[in-house]
Image (cartoon, rainbow, N blue to C red; front, side, top):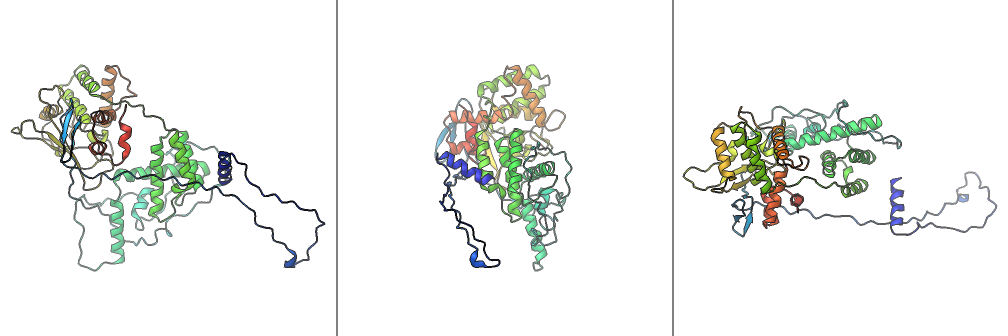
Length: 485
């Protein structure tokens, strides 16, 4: 049993043998109690046990970053960032601006959600097998339908397996107003609309994938599908399987967030917060593999740009990737912000750039990130990239030169010569060619190395932590892991 093993572990940790109560007794001839006489049946004294109290581990939440005033900088060599309170030298300029909030999307639903838990999912029997080999987590196995009515809880049904409604309104659409008095059905519909809009589409897809992996794992391990509430033992096996297959601690934590979210949504106890699961996560974090990616420093950045004319014949593509490399560094972008994938949501468009007029000499280019990873709806972030007159590697002049060939076509900011957006795979492939040409390891330099390099260079220039966090649009203290020695 897990409990007894933990108690024994704590006794061994304290170098103390477990206490046991010994009682000396004198053997006596046993008496035969009369049948059905309660006075002749003696109650055994309660067994004395020893309980070891383990103090709870608490963490201090990261401070909330508020939007800061307009910050401008000058690029490498060190650039001055001016704010209303302090002046710092930065390699990357930024300004954080608040914007008007937008109205969440809505979904049509008619059935009350009051019976969301009772009418939703059946609880699988407890897991009793302890000798089976834990299989790898795969998603190829066909899953049975979850049979959760979207009209009861549209978000919970979408996380499990129900398709998303196709009549979601566009962001910013005003809420529907009606002069008729509210009814239970209309209020339930509004609740479902708000719940569906509470998660970003990318988060919803990630939660859905996590549940598909858990259900597939349960079918492989026990031959039974699983629904909330998930047994703690099954969840511990799922974590062990992910760890055995090399999943990073952050990946495991993300999947547990999806599992816990659905339990909370259905007003069920969250198994991810149990003592056993939390201890497993602590142990897994101790085995974290160091991030082998190295930062792209200004010197490496120049070498990569110098290799473009050698590796790429098209003049358009040379200017395209020069602009992308410099933009990725000076704007501290994530790869999803400058390239496209089948599920792109945060890719920058030409409309996100504010280009200064020719009369504005040495004016910056302002980039507005309408949405980004962990962004708050209605709170975009903006960065002002300052020009470097006379510098061959000036980010502003490189972007303007690229835009002169791109034209004013609406759509993604970075387009190939055929008019298609630059995909993540195409950008990565081109970067690998450049990295190989300059003699570096492609396993250590990835598209994310631009962001790591910019954060490292900013920290070396003495940028305060709170400003560095705002520049990179980090919602937590994760920025610390990006600063390398």
